Image 1 (spheres, rainbow, N blue to C red):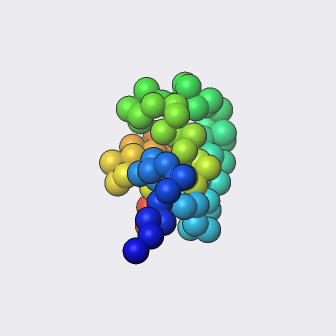
Image 2: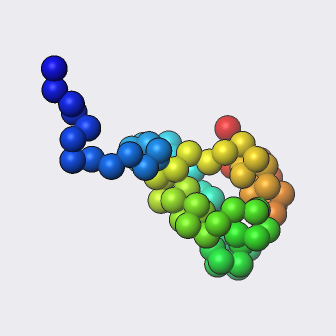
Image 3: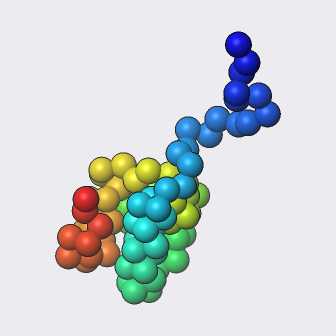
Length: 82
C-alpha cells in the first residue's frame, strides 16, 4: 500500500472548485462595490484578512456565519446565500 499524501501539505482547505471560485468572485465584487479592502472588511465580519483572501480565491469553504455576516455587511440581497 502506498501513501498518496507524501510530499503534500494538509492545509484543511479543499481543492478549488468552480463553485468555490464562483462564490469567491461574487463575494469580492460585493466587497469592492462596498469600497472595502480585505483589511477594512475583516473586523466587520470578524474574520482575518487571510481567511477572506482564501475564500475569495476559492481555496476555503465559507462558514455559514461568514456568509450571514457578509450578506448583512455588504447588503448583498441574498446573492451570497446558497
